[in-house]
Amino acid sequence: MDYFQYQDGVLRCEETDLREIAEKFGTPLYVYSRRTLLDHFNRFRDAFSKLNPTVCFSIKSCSNLAILKLLRDAGSSFDVVSGGELQRALEIGADPASIAFAGVGKTDAEIAHALNIPRTANNAASVGWFNVESEAELDNIATIAEQKGKRATIALRINPDVDPKTHEYTTTGKRETKFGIDIERAPRIFSEFSKRKSLDLAGIHLHIGSPVNTIEPYVQSVSRALKLIDTLRASGHAIRAINIGGGFGAHYDGGEAPPASAYAQQLAPLLTGKNLQVHLEPGRSIAANAGILLTKALYTKSSGQKNYIIADAAITELLRPALYGAFHFAWPIAPTSGLIPPDRRKDLKLSGTTLVDIVGPVCESGDFLAKDRWLPPVTRGDLIAIFSAGAYGMSMSSHYNSRCKPAEVLIDGATPTLIRRRETYEDLVAAERIPLQE
Ligand code: LLP
Image 1 (tube, rainbow, N blue to C red):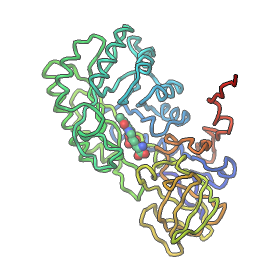
Image 2 (cartoon, protein in one colour; image 1 turned 135 degrees about the horizontal axis):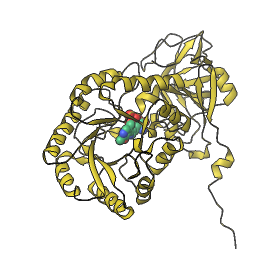
Image 3 (cartoon, rainbow, N blue to C red; image 1 turned 180 degrees about the vertical axis):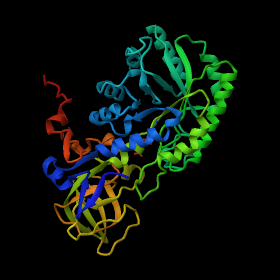
Image 4 (cartoon, protein in one colour; image 1 turned 90 degrees about the vertical axis):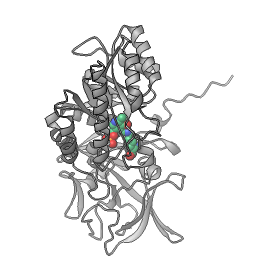
């Protein structure tokens, strides 16, 4: 369920007419629904409430400060994967002890930065958790922490060798990926590194892929991790936390994602009574359906057998279709034909529609937002919503072709708030310098 719905032939976000939003803020534009974000977050936390989990919203999925602040106020902690994301979490006043710092290649500077943040409650160390991906990284964190007289709390990310049955590029739980440490090697690593006084080896981290629309891969990987934890505890390691990562699904093509309650129903029994703090790192399941990309048809044209809508948004705003062949439902926000989609599905083909591609202005044949879609008539100036774009949309945007990044608006009922202004040409060149000629 989300709060982007057609009413009287026009798409609304909550109580707001999106035509007015486009008029006021221009396009391309990201529009987020506050109510949907909170609803998804609360449903997620409530589903797992028996475990009293720490829900760390994954900043990479949707990193606008206003949205992070909204989620923080709702009780979210954060998963960060870079110094930049850490900075964002700190900017909005996240408790450092609630932050999990993940990422396969943390630099020395990032590790030092994360170690230098005083915890509010306990000044002994830095961010709450380092999710560590290799022995070399563990050794490096130990050394930097030693130099600083700090102690880093570590969750070792293990690779459970489970197939999450998702896109190759977002599969992380199989052995032949760059992520995590082979599960068989974990006991040796724990016994070797538990000697390092600057490390508190206290958790196991998993993240098998994204989106994972079946629950079985989680059950398998959590079961494997729990077995490992038993082995580690039997050897005297005080494991107190398990982080089962993110990857929970969202709706792109109809209702393909299990609800949070379905994941929880199968996972909570496995994790109950284990004397483990449970951490979760959802991103997409909270943000994807809470945002749309609003774009304007600049031109229409036919070329060969194909009909094109040339929109003012491109791969620079939404890379997912080009990068993963990802499907995002698209529809005019106020179709002149009056045709309203009964649901958002790939195979939707209503009478009165024609087959079109929605493409952007960027100079690449791979620059498309939607391919082979049956859409009602669209003419120059019409506004089109690209749905399910709240996660990995703006956060993966780029300046390619020297395009300014779009604005972002957060809707609360009938009130829109600009949460990121549209970039200007000055912004585009602000970091660049032309060397002085002799
Ligand atoms: N935790 C870790 C360690 C992760 O690597 C990720 C995502 C998450 C949590 C959050 O996963 P989520 O709940 O959002 O699925 N750009 C791709 C997705 C890449 C996901 C990367 N890691 C896309 O647009 O589909």
